Every structure is written in C-alpha cells, then in structure tokens.
Image (cartoon, rainbow, N blue to C red; front, side):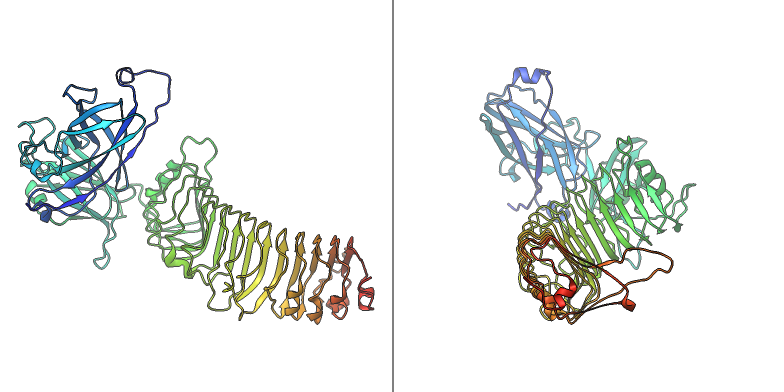
Length: 633
C-alpha cells in the first residue's frame, strides 16, 4: 500500500492559571500529570500527488474526546481548545489529568466556523488503514510527568465522514473542496513579491476569515454551486473584491490563484508619492493613519516610537507602513515598549543615512528588512530581546558606521563578517561579549573605533588584526581586557590618536603601533599599564598628550622615538584666557624617569604659550629640567 506522509509539529503552550477560585474540573480531576501532542498529516492513496506540502492552515480549534480506560466519559467530551498561530507553528494548551489510564476517541481540527478541516480516522474505517495508529489511542498519565502523544490526521477536503468512521451527516463535517491562493505586490517584469493579507469568504453569510502568509495558502470551502465572494485586504493597499464561481476555484487545486495588490487606492485618504519633511509617529493610531496615505518616499527623518510612558495606544504593528520604499535621512525606531516585529518594513529599499533601532524591549529581530539595498549606518542600542544579528548580511560591506550598545546577546560579529569598510564603529556596554574579532579591512580607511564598558571583554581575537588604519582609537572601562592584540594589521598604517582609560589589566600598549603623525595620546587611570614604548613607532605628535593616574608606569620610554611635538594653538585677539594645556603628566605614583622626552623638540604655533602640568608623580621635573638632563632623580 502506497503511503506518503509529511509531518507538521504542534508546539504546545502550557497555560498557567493564577487565582484562588476552584473550578468544577479541579474538584473532579486533580491535575497530577499532563499530555501534549505531536501531530502528523497523512495522505490517502495517491492524494499526495495532488497536494502541495504546506504547514497546516486555516485552523482555529482542536476538538477532542478523552475517555477513561473503560470508555466512561471525562470532562473532555468533544472539548474545544483554542489554537494560536505563530508563523508556521501552532500553539495549543497542554491538558492536565489525574493519574490513570485513558484513551483518545475523537480528535479533529476546525476552522473559525466550526467546520472540520482535519481529523484522525477510527480503527476499522477506510482511511484508518492508512494510519499507523487510528483512534482510539490509549495512554497513561503518571504523577508530575508530561505524556507526549503522536496522532496522525487527514485533511477532510473533498471527503465525506464515512471513510473516517464517522456517522453520515456528522455536525461540522461538510462536503468541501480546496484551492490555493497567493497574494503579491504589483509585479515588475513578472517578479512576484509575496505579501501577507487577510482573506474573507462569504456567500451571503460569512464562511471564512483566514490570514494569508507565505507563498502558498490552502483554502477549504463548502462545496456548492453558488458563487463565492472573496475580499482580500492588507493595511494600506487597495482592497480586492472578487466574485468567483466554484468551477473557477477548482482550477487552482494544483497551482495558486495569484492576487496582485496595489498601493494606489481609490479613497480619500490616499496621497502617495513623496512626503517632504520629518515624520514622528508615537502611537498605533498615528502609524495606521499615516500608512493610509500610501507614501513611497520620506524626504526627511522617519521616527517610529518615543511613545509616552503609560500610553493607552502603544505601537505594536508596523504593517500599515508597507508602502514606504525610501527614507532620505535617518530611520529611527526607538522607545516602543510593546513592539515585537518590524514586519511591514520589508519593502524599504533605501535608508540614506542611519537605521537606528533603540530601546525596544520586546523586539526580537531586525531581519524584516529583506528588500533593503542601501544602508550606510546601523545603530542597535538596548534591545534585549534581539538574539540573532543576521538579516543584513547582504549590506554589511556597504556599512560605514556601526554602533552596538547594550545588546545583551551580542557575542561576536556574526552577521557582520563582511563589514570591512567601517569608518566609525562603537561597541559599548555589551555585557556578554568576550572576544571581539573585528572584520579585516581590505584597504586603508580612516576608521574611528570606540570600545567602551564591555565588562566581559577579554581580547580582540588574536594576531590577525582587523584595521589597517585607526584615526581615533578609544578604549575605556573594559575591566577584563588583557591585551591589545588583534586591533591592527601588521602591514597597516597604525593609530593616529589614542585614548586608553580604566583598562585595569592591560600592561602594555604593544602590539599597537602608531602612524607617523600622532594626533594625540591620552592614558588615564590604567591600573596595570607599565609599558608605553609603542609610542616610539610614531615620528611626530601634533596635539596634546595626557598621562594621568597610571600607578605602575615608571618611565616614559617610547617618547625617545618622537622627533617633535608641535602644538597648534589659536590666538583670539581681545580675549585673555589661560593657555591651553598640551602636556599633562599627573598622579602617576611610580613615575620617576622622564628621559624619553629629553631630546624631543617641542614647539607651538607662532611660539604661542601652552600649558604644562607635571604634578603628583614620584618625580616632577619641569620641561627645562628634562631637556637639561635632569630627567630623573
């Protein structure tokens, strides 16, 4: 006997009921154990050749009967339980039972009108022969354990109840047929962009409402000769209304009826085209109202969120914005306490400046930007529910700016491996990243790199090196960072300006090396820093140096490799101000040797005066002392 089977898994959601009330069910049947289900769809005879493999669709409830071992009733006599859809998965509540022996004698899935769409046949029936285990299915419930039951179901489309072993004329079992349908945006060069929509079917009376998702949707309807009225809606798009005969729908048993939805609507709300100016949408009503206008382009900043605390209308659904294809400045999604998905933004193709996704505690992904072709800046800040960082891989090599802050699940550069053209990158306050292996640049770019307040960060990934040239490197408050390996490629051009603050475990600046022209060095409160000889890889310093609060630093070895410090100072006629500090060396309790500075030529613009602070070190010479040879005690 030929049999072909495809499995669909029902994920089961346990419902925890809180409260002090005692129900009749709790009095009759103490909850000592539970059962859950794995459901497989089976096909009869050659039916599989006429079906397309799809997730189970259109179901709203599971109806089941559970009997005691002797056939006596429990409270689960044709009990209807709600089904919650979540993408292609289905959630139903777990069933609690007292210890004992039971059997399932009825199991089927119904639509919103109570029509049976799938059922498990009874043993001895025609269709029961196609199942490994038809009904009834015995099972045991033991204390404090969950029993997983495997049930097979068969679609009722085009079938009568008798082959299932049911009585003729069984309630909810109507003679049905099915067809396939897909909804797409307006086709361009025959390319089909599938979109979700809602389908309502009626024949005078309402027959069915079903969400259409993905490329294919199977619709099951009662068979009769009257025409069917189909209404298809999707937020800001023009609704479609069609009257179609039964015979016409039968033509789509093996391939889908394609419905094109257009953005241009024939109502008083639709405007379309370009909106000039900034847009701020802070409530769901504002999102829905703006979406009805059908704009393609926002010539300005688009901000979604900043919802006031305690708002009765927080933003939860962005599907009304599905007509937008381009944002000419920044696109900001910020401060949305209830937003879980960015679906509705999948048709945006261009964001001219930065995409900023910030402070959205329930947002789970940013992977809905499937049509995005142009993006140069990405900011992800304080979105604790985002666990995966893929979805923009195709744009990684176009990114020039990347800011990742307060992302608890950010642990590496997965999703950004090709981000080799970064001009500015900030990695800040990410509690769980331990190794930060930057993508390796393939050409010299003026990069600004900030790595700040990442408490678990240990290293930068080893010897390979990410950057060829770092214009400004700012490392601060990474308390477990051990060394600076992995930041620079050995054949690159080094660092121009360096800021190192509160790195308690870093002992040396090596293997960093500097550009010929150094634009500033700032070393603050690094508890273990003892070696700064890497400074000698540069040649000149063109801006201030500040070395403060480094208790293990004993000498300034490295500065002997610098030929000149040249400070640019702007004189303001008519204003009397203190000269700007250009050399600050303070509070380094072990520092006694300043001889690295002895032969360095120090100049300023037009010989203007500049400030020098050398205080509270183990030895505190003046610049004249140093240049005169009194550079250590």
